[in-house]
Image: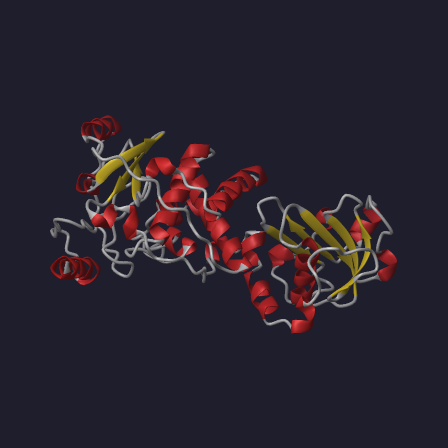
Length: 380
């Protein structure tokens, strides 16, 4: 047993730190550094060594014939183990954004397609060969024109905008996966490509599944087993500059400030708020009878405290909205809210059904707010 363990250790070290030349072909834990068009593009030897090799283009019919000629692995894949999310609210928000974006960009609006992409990303997060965060995996290599793991992160596709409904559906699927829902069909796959391309690396891997037009692969041997995905996730999601336009992602700077808020601000109970309750910098002036919405008089205008107010009132579960006014006379006494009251709104916090946050401020009252988080008159 000691000899076997030593051999596995040597193999692991070689894959992580050995020769990553284009002609190197390991016999057990294959990891050639090559680039292929379409879908998930590279087989990195290690996260900090993303070499690339351009492919000669072939026509679609030829690619599909070559892909069809490659048999599926005889051993069916075991389902991946449920993902265990352990991180902050900010980690959750960022990982939802990155997973949802990857799912939409790679699989369009397809439910099984999106779930398959999301599963591959999470498989990579837990695999020793890749980044250890969701956003880190999705945007790995995007700083290099020939190094991106997902083509949409470096081919101009990030300029595309998706509808609110598309974002909500993709975030819902992403949230379910982060909460442990497994898309069993792709097993422990860490790579895929569309069936109209035939990257050279596909011959090095075990083809294990097809979901619509995407083919899914795993490394041969232990490196491709679900046991190889043993890295625990602990959050620390990076901020992605390309996603700063998203309200949920743009809240990163505010979230950081909230983490340093005085302890007195976080001592308010999450549930049971009623009219007259003081919550941080606000006092509840009205609440919707069936719950899920509050009208608040704000006694301060600092964005970290206002954001924390919204979170404490909503409690982090289900759809909820908090609307606040710094002028006590402008606070409506009840629902519904008149257009005149909306026009004087100072703060708006929305938590949607996927636990994504949307935060807006009257930037004439609150200072140093990112422009995308300012409340335009139309949104009041």
